[in-house]
Length: 387
Image (cartoon, rainbow, N blue to C red):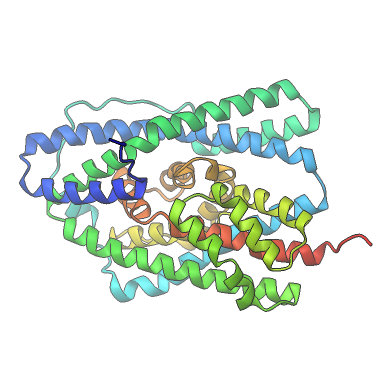
């Protein structure tokens, strides 16, 4: 019989369901065994994140040198500005909306720590460097490769990036459902699972609504610049949105996004240049998803995030996620270190965020690819065809 292959989304849902049920009846010894695996996987995540940044961001920056020019600079700057604005939009909207249907501190540290389960073995796997060091190193090496034209070094980092991708796809990503299962099982055993699932559904629906609203804003701006009907252009991108939602990948949707962009009247050479580039640097949807979830998790755990701290996080997160769409769950993985190093998230808060983030993965990539079409409209207008 043909082997049935479950998507990450289905595996996460199964993990949440099984963890919630098992946590209600499992003895403490079983929960502690699961906690041991949870701690071990968390250590692996901390270890891989700096390598992910170095392995993906460095080649992405180095590759910019191939087509360096005004159009390249314009696309990258617009994409970065859009990603940062998406994060600020999610933070501002979430700060206004969440108090209406979430309870501050309902999942406080005190509530979570009311009953603790210690792991049997607490193995430490220190990362080679922190996330900020990895970002600085990536920029230094990437720009250095552009300046010196060192092909051997560039090839080395390209190959290192492939190794990191393989490790993510074959080891880290397959472990995520089990990581979520162990965390949900512990939450259920502590008696706080109802709060987690109830709040999680509200957070996810808020993120979906914000991502759609942000797309409308993007296309209103792009339509005004390109002098085209924004709603018609947005409708033409609907196939790309559905495809991105279903396969949860920005890079894999490039052919569909390109066809939709051409339907909006964008020149073929502009579409062929802009869409593949934006698929690696324009993460507006994933940032909305991450930012809204982070804001909500901080709110329900009783640790609100000051704007200055959050703004710093968004600026760094928009850089860290460059080229991460090449790996399933890459945006989330690239941001984990920043959540802890900048926002001060605890491992429990990070695990909760990952659970909610992965529970409905598709709307982030769907917003990403649809937003790429808006940038293509702007570039098509700003760089007219040579006559």
